[in-house]
Length: 339
Image (cartoon, rainbow, N blue to C red):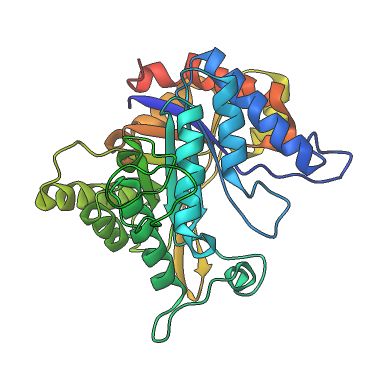
């Protein structure tokens, strides 16, 4: 395990029990947590994207702001729902945010998760082409986005432009070199992981797989990762791919930790239904640091990945989440091979 970061859903709720009561709170605290994570020595700050929800939505202003406040930490998404995206406009936003951050963006994209509203992408002006569905549309948007990020010209210049043009066809600007290699696909199945490798994207796998074979979650996820790596090698890509997995990990080192998460010490995988099919959810990890080290050392997917993203309870506030990150980085991660 080479990298450890956090993944925040950016929930906000006006309840008095929440430390994050407004959209402004969620955005400002996300930036502050990224700054705190960098100061603690963490490697990444990642944010979920959900539309029509009291959660983080438009990622690029947030990523740009966090990029301006930090200097080293990776900044990413997990994941951007490509059903909602105009891939050309997204390429402009991504290029700008990446340049502001000095080339530190790691963008997770995907078909998206179950929505808050019915076919929400239609409200954004996106309708699947005849004979296709929303998943096909997401992959087509992703194809165009990846192609544009290559930086090749494709648009015919106007014969009498307002400003002088370079010779040849024009590309989307601003262009950020290297960003194409820092795009990840959030894969929910083993076969999608194979497709991800064929497209030359890194693999992002969360605590949910939309399939179940009866084996423990970490073993199914490890199989997914191996299939991704095999497909990557078969495709003949020149660079080494990256793989991330997400986990909920809470070292119990204080009375407050025990009050919040002591009930999760016996967490188990769960099997349920999403979009009409079986899905397996990975368990949470909570316990004394030595116990966590033993349990996580047996997690085959963590061993197979290079990046571990810690899902954080953002509504407990920046200070508490920084404490959780510090506890993992100090008491757990080094025993698993980090640094």
